[in-house]
Image 1: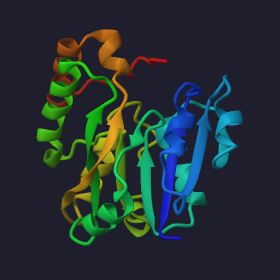
Image 2: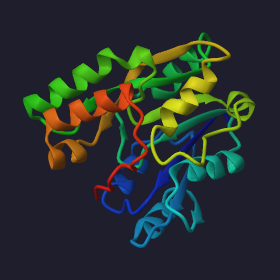
Image 3: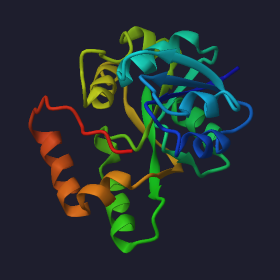
Image 4: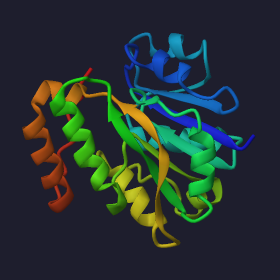
Length: 212
């Protein structure tokens, strides 16, 4: 199997089914329930392989999923991120011909103008190494950089990308995922955009608040 989709899920019963149903049938699907206390595991078992770990550590969840993956291309997908493009796997494979790690473009699951502007703004900066709820690489690259840093409570995705970039370039696949706007809706668009910019520039060890 070429592709393994690895999804860390901490109490994602509201989102996980839609995410799994959006994935291509040809891809291996692995959900890692990390510290779940809801129905995430029960729902995920209908559509994918499931691994359960006790702690809500997203990096450990991704690493555990990668250990069990049989594909030579690993796709790390957020549990609330839905695949939009039919050519999803083809574009990822094509991107990895010239890059060692990458992401895709994203659109919003909200029809509001603010949501569309927020995603367009984010898409403009993907080339800097931002991700849009999805990161992909070849399994050999994942192993070369020793996976995700399990000691990080946030920015583990950018840390992983940075490690990969020591061996090659970053790519943005010409396909889309639909991003959940739940954080923007809870905290406000402007406030959250400013927060992300500050997080990019400054180091802050406070963990992200959980939004469910």
